[in-house]
Every structure is written in C-alpha cells, then in structure tokens.
Image (cartoon, rainbow, N blue to C red):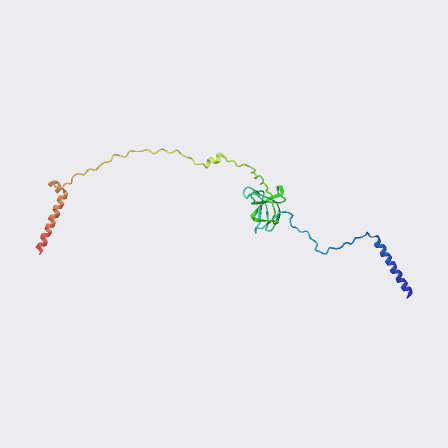
Length: 207
C-alpha cells in the first residue's frame, strides 16, 4: 500500500505543479464587481423630434408643403415613423428626413401625423421653389381659330309701309223699306204690333 500511496502523491504533486505553471503563463485578469441592477439596453427609438403616421391609410410624402403645387415623391404607411426636420410657416406641414429623393427630405400634412416626443420644437423651414413644367404650353392660332364662332353681319330691319286701308261701303237694301222710305227698324216694330194684335183677337174670339 505504501508504494501505491507514494505513487499517487507524486502524481498529485506533479499535476498541481503543472496547473500552477499553466495559469502562471496566462495574462492576469482583473475581476470586477458585477452590477446588481438592470442593465440599460439600446432601443430603436428615433433621437430628436420625429413623426408617427396616425392616419389609418398610407399618406403621401410631397416635395413641398402644398398638395396642389408640389408632386408626391413617396408614401408612409400607418404607424411608420420618420425624423422631423422642421415645419412650414403656417405649421400645417412638417418636413421629414426621406432618403432616396432630391435633398433627402420630404413634407407630410401635419393633421395626418403625430409629433414626438412631447414638447418637441421644430424650426420654421421656408418652402422650396415650386417645380416648373418642362415645356410651356402654347396655343396654335390656326387650331384656335377653328373653335371661334364666325360672326356674320346682320342687316338692319327695313320698314315697309302697309297698303292703304279700304273702308267698305254698304248699299241700301231693296224691299219694303226702300219703297216706303221707312226705316227697317220701324217696319219691324209695326209688324210686331200687328202680330200681337192679331194674337189678342184670336184669343178673345176663342173665348
């Protein structure tokens, strides 16, 4: 048992010496106390002022602060964010960073987005010049003349005198009135009286 014990002791001493020499050659490590609190993590929140699309549909990003004077250069989806760079003089439009377009900036309509963080301040940015059309439209005078109404000269109305008015004349009727020289009205009255008198006589004779 003693030789085995001596052999084991020699092996343990040799192993310990080997480990001592191995760790002695490694560079010294300084142990530091580990923090007991929570370690802060880096998040993807934009630094500085930013906008978030609150409109339920996608919105247009335009080259300037006006829907009619400046063309659309891109879109933002609902919930999408972008760094804010400034605002228009009236405050209705916000300039944002929009890479990939001329100047890498665009404009969004302020009522469609929310500005963060709270109490964020944006400087006033002058609007860019409105884009000019590549060609100036011209009017062809020959083509325009085809659509102009042709006015014809009108003659003034002329007055033609009516023919002279002919007044008809009636000749006296021939008959009993002409022979007797009595008016026709008087003859009619006399005949009516005679007829009435005859009717009265006939009535009295019948009784």
